[in-house]
Image (tube, rainbow, N blue to C red; front, side):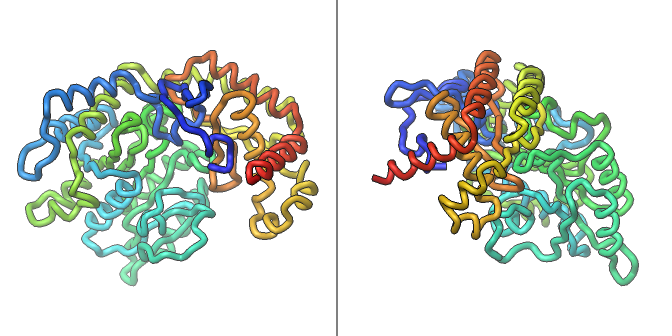
Length: 442
């Protein structure tokens, strides 16, 4: 990403969805901080909460003092989430939350089951454990990881059932201790159907498998409901993970929240209580949890799901219209709420790309798509003042993911900018992009 214009620029300050560069430009941030900035940059209530904490000299963290911040945040998470998703643990990163959820599932079964299942297109982090549960094409190097990982095709319930049936112990019992799934895959813009998710719930209940929903990116209103799975009434995972916008764009904090019977069976004893930790040094750090409390308050009180639906009412028809008008260069558009992917066609410029960078094509079959997508991103930034990105997983969609505090007028202006950008023509955009990259080297 630093090969683009913004790789060489400095931001002076940022507010809401607007970045102000040192040289006086105003850039509209449509990356949403890759999931971190549902609240936008420097939300005034977030800043005020952190300032109050500092001005009152509140104590940060101490292992032997009760923390009102951890207690309040745990209470508020239980109030927001449905059913008996009541028990929270608060590490620092999304990957740690995933690993904590997996540890919980393994401990819940007392170490007597040895198989964990994840989807083929999954992205759950890059630590040794979470990385081994990630199906991204970025995983081209074999680090050691969690044993017993079995993958299944995303959204294929019959394949999941078959894989569970194969994972039988000699006594006929199920050997799967956890099934990990992203209800909405933000790195590929694919989503699970209601039938699939309810089918997973039924299967996991029948087999005693701990069902984990990874909502690290999609939580806190991004897709039009507070969490993606909550659009389906009565659907309940055993554990849900969250991070990114959970910290309001300021706090490095995550959580896994478990159903109370699952959590208590695993860790509700003096002997086992400390086994849950994925990180303890900064666990419950006061300013981080106080920030997250305010971030959750804002998401609820300002109705972030409704804000996402308002953005969708503009983006969905607008992107559909652009896709129809530019059908030779757009393959499809997918998304929900304020999280959308535009899949571009590289075919129109593959011959050109092959002449410019034949080695790149040989090494990476997605090179053409990436180059075309990068050219569009660069054009939007340089000539229309919109900051966007693309994912490094799946088919590398160009991502439209504005913060939930974005002015609807900016969403309308983005659609005009994208339309004008694609009207230039992909071959011309690619050649312009390549020339600018070459000239920047001199």
